[in-house]
Length: 112
Length: 114
Image 1: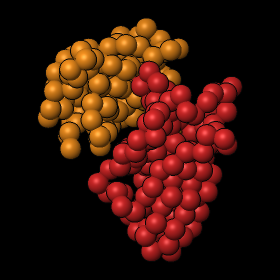
Image 2: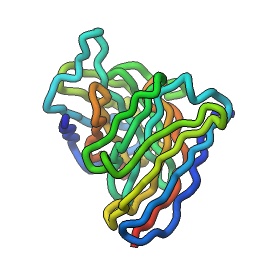
Image 3: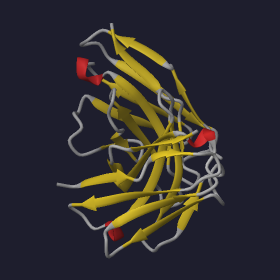
């Protein structure tokens, strides 16, 4: 199974400041079709997960442009340019290159 | 409105069975890959199973051989048959649609094995 490792696991951020979450996989997520199968999700307290970024850098529909995804191969980053109070929650990376699909451990973002 | 609604969760004894259902509205299930994902309260997300557009199925190692995913196109519904349940299967179970990422999630149904 592909192992996904996120850091940090806890991220306190001041509103208006940027935030960055790292995700590493133990296998390249680049498919032979040229796509990189890495997604980012946010789970707000008491809610179901919501996709933020798919295919490593494509912003999902309705997601503010404060969110961006980057990276390739085995190293990926989710960046929030200016954190807002509503961004509180747990952020997960997920690889969809092969089954079993696997998630990172999650990064809890809190507001300072 | 595009949505998924799970049902069928509940309390079951170890070794028992449950069948989870997931009703889709606002879109046709057969046009998408579909997943079951679970989450122990306070813990992370765990992918369990998927069914592809052509009906191919996939399972995690933790549930393969015990859980079966299926789809009823006429009812526009997804199912997860869970047999030989264990205490560690206690979790919230989500069904989800795969489009641009896993873009539609249900609210989940709770399974307690005790």
